[in-house]
Amino acid sequence: MADTIDEANQLAEQHLERSLRAARQPVPVGVPGECEQCGGDSARLVGGRCAPCRDGRRR
Image 1 (cartoon, rainbow, N blue to C red):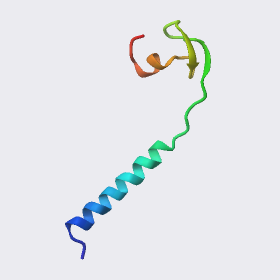
Image 2: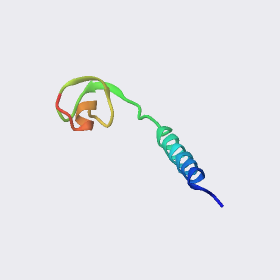
Image 3: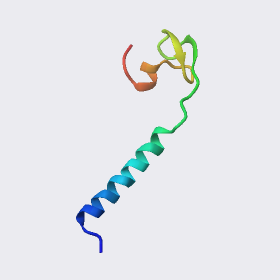
Image 4: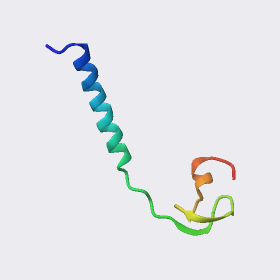
């Protein structure tokens, strides 16, 4: 029968596995150009938008 420490360790392992799986997501390829949303020049556009516009931040 598992005790509290065993259950906590199992939960921590599951959390680590989920975190590692999430971190392995591919990074989209970016291209230089002018942002379609704010019009600013950016070294890396993804889907036509710069990082601040994709994140909802002000430039």
